[in-house]
Image 1 (cartoon, rainbow, N blue to C red):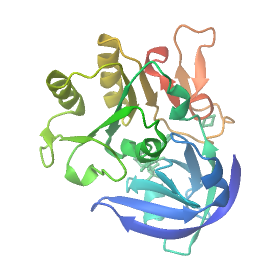
Image 2: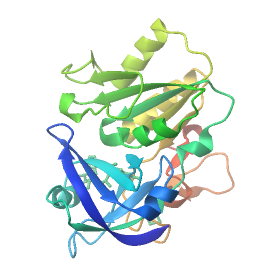
Image 3: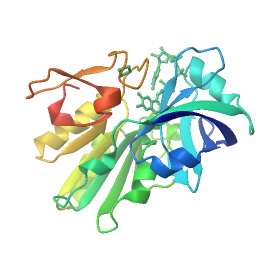
Image 4: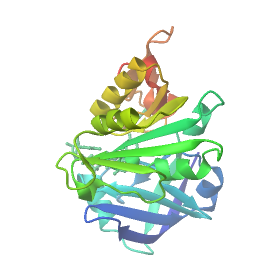
Length: 254
Ligand SMILES: Cc1cc2nc3c(=O)[nH]c(=O)nc-3n(C[C@H](O)[C@H](O)[C@H](O)COP(=O)(O)OP(=O)(O)OC[C@H]3O[C@@H](n4cnc5c(N)ncnc54)[C@H](O)[C@@H]3O)c2cc1C
Ligand code: FES
């Protein structure tokens, strides 16, 4: 992991609400793995704390992230321009690649809202002998992006795109219609969504790995502010930023 000043190559809207920011980094592009995140100091003096963003894509020496404008940090980020510099720290956290083995054939990706962010990079590096089905859920159409994904199924709460309902309802419907053998879930999104998907995976006896969301002050294991309770282990808590962000969901209290 290292800190560097990078130059923004582009900032474009993928939908009316989601932006993709691309910058150049020889270092990050050579070491980053799918599921890892970077910590960005979005402003020179404000906000003070870095914001974590999943690595959305690596293309040559170009790194992309995606975000929607939520609060202070993302507002500042949305006003950046081509040629501006950014202070980035990374790559941080573990990778989904650590949880790929021979015991499953089909990967079920589940992305809730902007939680889809790590999946295009993961899709690119997924073993070609395994099938991927990507389930995306969002409140409405503008919060859905499909770039870089395979076999996409979409749900929106208001029915403005795809299936009307929750992403879990869509998964259940799809599983009823298609029989997949030996599956494994990979999930990223709001905790509430990850919890219901995890409960379903446990119910049907399938492993589920989730990239956990939490507020991060340092993002590198120093402040101890991102604890998650772990189950069935001597250690009671783990740090999401350093020992995750990806955990098998049955081992943590979501
Ligand atoms: C490992 C990790 C990876 C992440 N990857 C991405 C990513 O790829 N793209 C992305 O857009 N965001 C990502 N996030 C969230 C991101 O770091 C910021 O928290 C988020 O963009 C809001 O930052 P902000 O400064 O704009 O809002 P803040 O000013 O920090 O927050 C404003 C308000 O919004 C609330 N809020 C903060 N985050 C969220 C959220 N995610 N959903 C709903 N309300 C929220 C806060 O509680 C607060 O009330 C990631 C977070 C983690 C921990
Ligand atoms: S955010 Fe500081 S230890 Fe995890």
